[in-house]
Length: 348
Image (cartoon, rainbow, N blue to C red; front, top):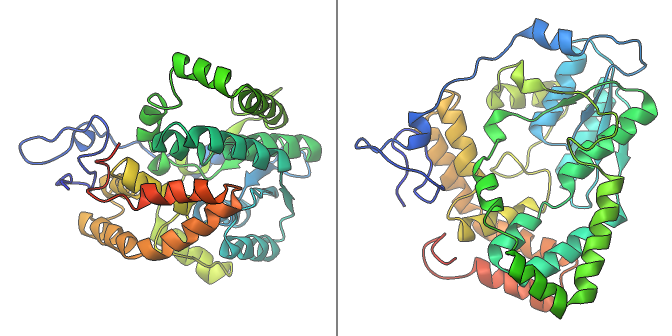
């Protein structure tokens, strides 16, 4: 598979073009975004007279863990930590949550939702009958809403005035927005599904309405919850972040990738590799290369590590599919996608 001579984006990346030197069009139009400094985020957050200066959603992964650590140690603020338990949190991430909040003396509020489980399962079953792409894009259904909408509910309950997130431009994954426009069927197919499976479709719509009302997404939160992206004000340096948490907060890592905190991600990675011919790692490491935080050789090394982990990921994937609530035939259908012969990304 051809990759950019400057970063590591593959030729399967949507809309990509290569110049005569083999450099991709993404690198060719890249403009570094300046990072604001310490005073910028202090102006955004600061002390506000509440018991909790801010609320920090935390998963047990590296980025959000580092944000919580810095909010306390660097900025001297009193945050409230919030965790949404989607039922698939990696055991290492669970340990990180407990160790970090205990070390920092930060209260942790955790919530979960049976409604989320039922709604996601219904969407997965419907989209599995459509296409591998539709199913892939449904795997993370609901979590963004539950993280942001849940944070809003907890912030309102405890009086926190602002949300500080560990989101970063490195994880933007703009290619996903392209695929979202290609998926979930056209109007005609949806009408056909409604006529052939009226009860399933009505149940999915009812559950979806109830879920979105319980966990509103960004832009739909009543009264709003101002948010700050921590890495808009601080440099994103993975090695430094991991060293900081490992040495100072009893933090642990699992696997070769950066997003190990959710077990569903194993399914996302493997299915992306087959359906799209690329994964989030291709995009993520390329972003780090452009920002000078990783060499191209290091990025290629990371991608090779991922390829070595495929057997372990597949075993975890099969277990996760069963936990998602899919029956034996449905699990088998997804595994058949993963085992399809030929070049990744060439089947669909």
